Image (spheres, rainbow, N blue to C red):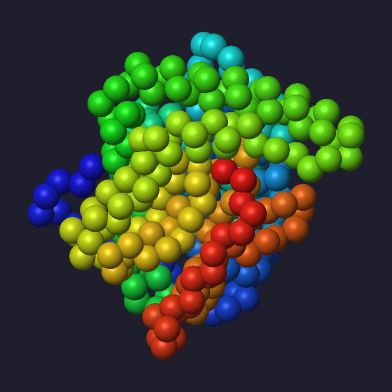
Length: 295
C-alpha cells in the first residue's frame, strides 16, 4: 500500500498521433488494462486474451496483477500452448514498441520484489499513477491490499482460492452439458461468489476502500482488478474502474487517444461495450451500466 505523504510518480507517456505506427504496428489505442489472467491454471482464457490484444494494439499495456498464478506452483499447475502463445504475444508487444507495465497482485506477489526493475523489456511497478490523454490522473494498482481476507487471513484466502478453482472446473463440465443441450452457459462460481460475498458485503466494501485511497492521494480515478468483477462507476467523486478478469468474464479497459475510457467484454471474438467514460472536456460523464456480465 502507498505510504502516507508519498504520491506515486505520474508515468509519462509519449504522445503519438491517432493511428500512429510503431515498429510496423498501428497503435489503435492509447492504453489497455487487463488483469487476473491466472496463467498456470486450467481456467485461464489465454487464447481469448491473445485475440483481444491483437484487436487492441496500444501504446501502453498495463498488466494489473495476477497475470501469473504463483499460488498454483507445486499443486494443480497447468500450462497450455495457448498460454505459451500469450507470453509470446506479450513479448512481441514490447518488441513492437508497446510500453508494457506489470503491476503485480497477490497471486504473483513474488514479482513485487522486482519493483522498479525491467524484466525482458517489461517494467515492474508496485503501483503507478497514469496520466490520461485529457490530463486526468488514475492510480493503477491490483487492489489486494484492500481485501481484508487476503491481507489478514492468508490461510482462509488460500482455502477460498482452492474452492474457487474447484467451482471453475465443475462449471466447465456443467456448461459442456448445457451446450450439448443447446442451452445458455451459466457461471456456477459467480453464483457462489454472489451468495457468499453478498453476506460479507465484499465487493461494495472493496470498491469503496479503493476509491477512498484514490481520493486520499488526490487523483481523479483508480484502475484495479483482484475481485474478478468488471465495473466502472463514480464513488464519492472518484472514477472507479475494475478491468475484470480472464478466467470467466474476459474483460478489459481501453483508453482512446482523446482520453475516453471504455470497459469491454471479449465474447467469442466480438467486443461488447459494458461502460464508457468520456474525456474530461465533455460536459457530463455518461456511464453505461454493465448488462448481462457474468462475474
